[in-house]
Image (cartoon, rainbow, N blue to C red):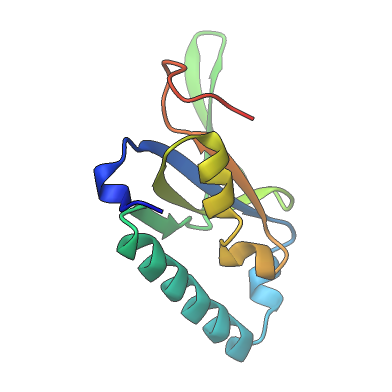
Length: 127
């Protein structure tokens, strides 16, 4: 593969989801092992100029909704399909982004990963 720094790359979101606070059920040693895998994956993405940013999502949530013309805030504590974190990556196209996301360590401990283009103008085609 050519050096990604010389290719036209587009931003993509790699969104990670879990159910029932699955991370908390892992042993501390398994969590540490997975964090090492995440670090290695990010290092590999950086070396290929594909990493932009990433972070775990906090646990506390507030849902904002427009109700009869006013914005209301309420506690929001779902137990399924909970966003646990994200990465922003660069890729040539959607297929390349999916291929990169297949290496996400979240897939090794029961999470699901969603890949989305981080653009609104339709310049990056989907699957």
